Image (cartoon, rainbow, N blue to C red; front, top):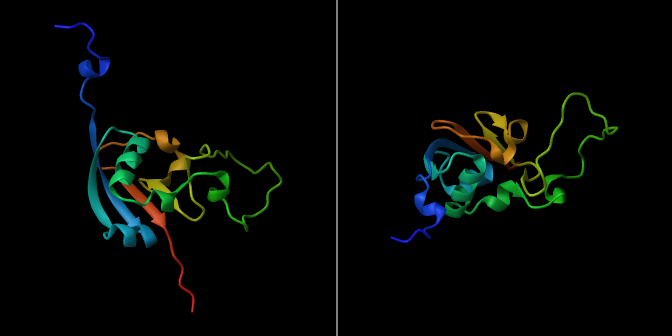
Length: 134
């Protein structure tokens, strides 16, 4: 038996997590359903999104690749010193302008971003609204 086996061959099998999915707006239209369970290998939001986006082609609807994709004209101006604690996900890990990713009702940037730990039964919501005007 060779001692040159990779570490991955000795590693424990990756954990699997099952979350509840809720989709609205264009994401719901694209996926074709609004509520379902989804099981993936791993336990972080990042691992979930990688698996989910491989199966459902909605990454461009939700994740901003650049800072410009994450913002839009019309945000309220601030003096550079807003009240409270503000944090932002790093570029490439932000939601698109008007799109939202939430875990158990909290936007991912208010928890641990894409490193948020998920457990069985957590609720993932993808929100990409649409407007209808007459």
